[in-house]
Image (cartoon, rainbow, N blue to C red; front, side):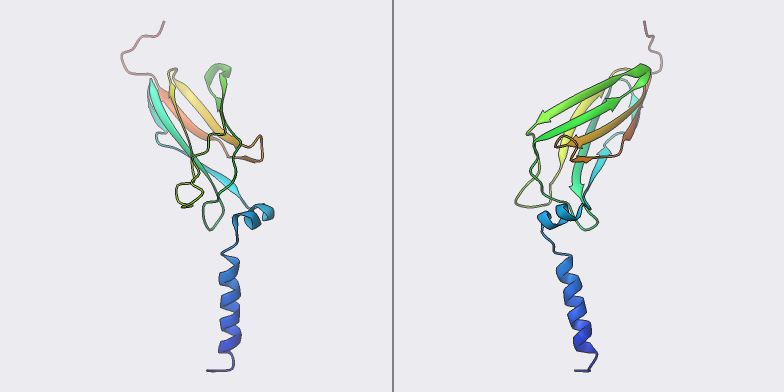
Length: 142
């Protein structure tokens, strides 16, 4: 074995150990974010949209005790809505593979909507994601 190979091996081992930090350590570092997506970003009214979100960092999804999930919706003409899911946690504490939060809603009025999720009363919050609802061709609104 060459003289330089042992220090390089130690360095690689140290780097590898850092990437296996516990979820608790990752939360203490504050590098956790919420990834939010919508299955449909644009369509005709009435538009059913499923939103999925999960806690993650640069390496993987993260488990966390969830007490409250709040979905905030802003829409056309000053429309606002809050949908709160108390203790509604789809995070799988075992597999760490299906760590997600889920919400499905129907948009009936055409316009652009902004949706955001807030977890544990503001401990974590996502960026807004946008959904555009188009008026169905040939439909007359009253």
